[in-house]
Amino acid sequence: MNKDIIKQHREFLKDTQRKEYNFSQTDQHKGVPAPPVQKPFDPAARRVSLFSPEDWKGSIPGVDLESAILNRESRRDYAPDPLTLAELSFLLYCTQGIRKRPHPLAVLRTVPSAGARHSFETYLLIGNVEGVDPGLYRYLPLKHELVWLNEVENMEMRASMACFGQQFVGQGAVTFVWTTVPYRMEWRYGPLAHRVILIDVGHVCQNLYLACEAIGAGTCGVAAYDQQEVDELVGVDGEDEFAVYLAPVGKI
Ligand SMILES: Cc1cc2nc3c(=O)[nH]c(=O)nc-3n(C[C@H](O)[C@H](O)[C@H](O)COP(=O)(O)O)c2cc1C
Image 1 (cartoon, rainbow, N blue to C red):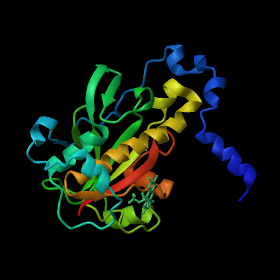
Image 2: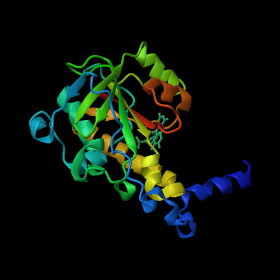
Image 3: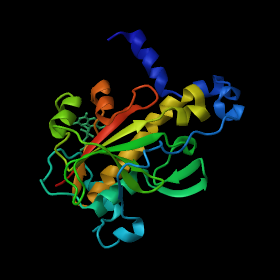
């Protein structure tokens, strides 16, 4: 282990730059309008309406918070049962749902985010959700809908191979892939953006873990993946948008 390199990398974990960085250099400070809170989508593409919080009442058995926290664990064995659309809606709302929109270019979600910048997009590799054709979708939090992207041949195998052969990835009913659009955070924080992006994604996945407990499902955060393969799988450019974390979900 090269101690100098380790020392250098540890700096990334610290907030030292905040005192040194000249915030007048950020696009926000220069008056550049904030980037959109959600990536644009093809309006002609097929969309799937999701259940809103009022609609899923009764379909989600629920569990008290204490039990959810005490029982949470990383689960890598999934039953072959499908998720219902109400359950998937619940998971999406718990992880990236929008609860307030104080400004067209600013939203508040069910998870916290540094400066409320929320830099993530959620891609779903759907294999087994009732009434939903298998394939790649993206969550549209502003509409609380899914937009269809494309079919994925050999989806289970590709997901697993893109995660260095971790077989359970792709064996769930659905695999969440979170990408970041880093400029959404850089617009406000410049070079300080990247540290908080990774802090943010932990909150997202923790909500997924706890929400899974409420529907008799399990998940496992996955940070070991081939960057290029996962970016290709979800169709992002790897520069202005790239994957940061994955999580398969299945009934247990
Ligand atoms: C950031 C992060 C990355 C992880 N990446 C993987 C992974 O690539 N493969 C895997 O099987 N588990 C992964 N895990 C799950 C951990 O192995 C798991 O959380 C740990 O063993 C503790 O078990 P528990 O979650 O059941 O408490 C990851 C967890 C976190 C938080």
